[in-house]
Length: 187
Image 1 (cartoon, rainbow, N blue to C red):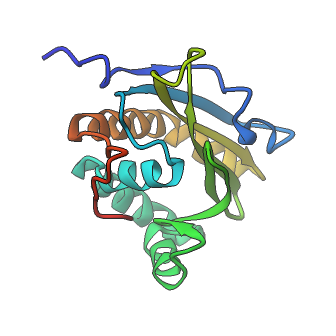
Image 2 (image 1 turned 45 degrees about the vertical axis):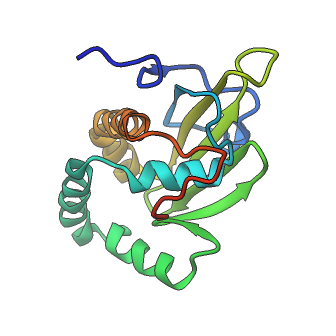
Image 3 (image 1 turned 90 degrees about the vertical axis):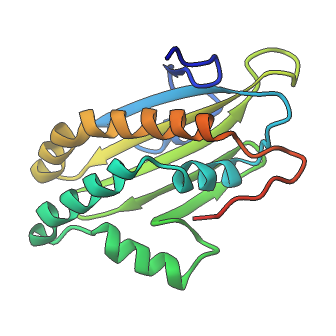
């Protein structure tokens, strides 16, 4: 089945208006993916980010469990640990990630660990002069602190790209929340 124009996820340059583009002096991974939003879609970046995470394909959860089993012995933060932090502090976290900043157009979230720091951004942007066409751009930047971080990012980069693209496609297929007040389960 051919994806609709709203399910098409495209690799794009990091947008100039994305604040995370200048977060780190040295970047070991940086990518951005865009998906077109249908007219009438909610444009609150935090709610869209929460929607994306609430609609992820089930295989991503299994992949995260495998990742946690592999890295727990290295003293790295696991999703289980981060989830417990989120349960205690839902206002400053988006799911398992710490919120670092938000505006009307963008939310920046991520995590710092001993091997690497990363930031993710969900940005609502208008690709044309009118507000009729909106895009959601999901950007990731990673800064590694040491050899473990560089090895880790080398190994997970292909999975990271698959996860981001699959998450955006799945959210589009599920139907983005409408600005008219459609509700969904928040993460």
